Image 1 (cartoon, one colour):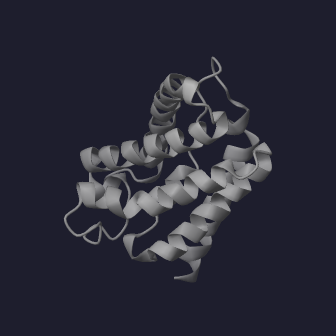
Image 2 (spheres, helix red, strand yellow):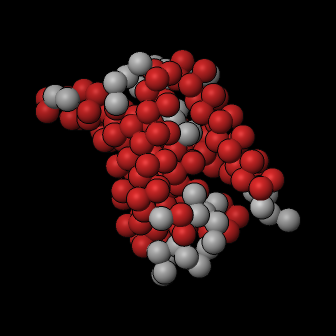
Image 3 (tube, rainbow, N blue to C red):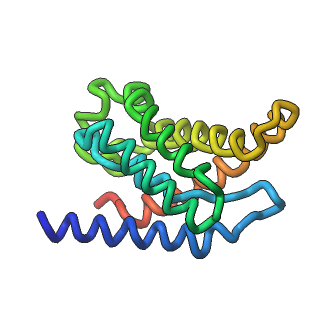
Length: 168
């Protein structure tokens, strides 16, 4: 049990460092910003508890904000993602995700994980880029950027899931 928790913590720290030191410096064509750290919020067990999930979301986003020097944009967006996650789980699961135990590509299946993750990533990105821009006149650009960055982020999240949770 302790070894599993330690592995999870090391994995989260590694993912945050990858995001903060490498992926935050990727801005392809000015629109593609991959944010794979969201996989932490998306894959925490459904039994984790909503309040704890929002605290983890806040501190995870706050850590990314420190790397990006972006105020509290990521803290707000990941807390928002943690807040809507139970609704996203009800979208694809009958018991709010309780039947999966773990939330990942292997346990949920490709289609359910893809739908669940896609909605989570897109909502996170729309929230993040709307706060970043904060102008109604630029809403089309926010949606365009959210879709492109969301597709890129989702692709990287799926690749990460395929690497970590290969079906036997």
